[in-house]
Length: 108
Image (cartoon, rainbow, N blue to C red; front, side, top):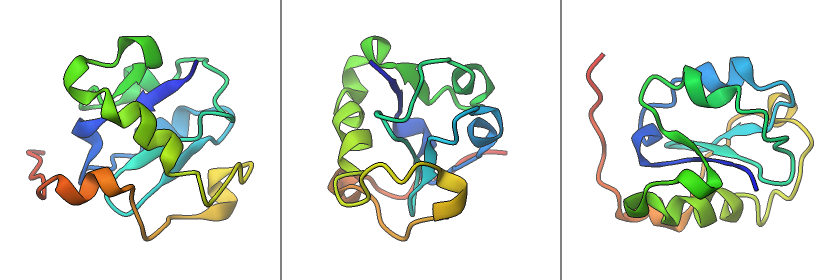
């Protein structure tokens, strides 16, 4: 089990979650953040700091965003388990699921 970042993060990338993650397992894609499921220690520190409530425990992901559970894992198919987002840096790609998501405008 792991935590999952879902739809509200698309085109927002607030990154407050990164500051709270003790194991540096939240990686930056082009349009959203992703949690590396094998590196996540299920501490839950990221969930309450997300300003748009995009992070859920895997069992609690709302039905309309269930695809994001697989999408978080899919982001790491090529990357594997880099062992730390900070050293890897932002990536210039996203999972195919996001190709279907129109640009999101967030109110600040």
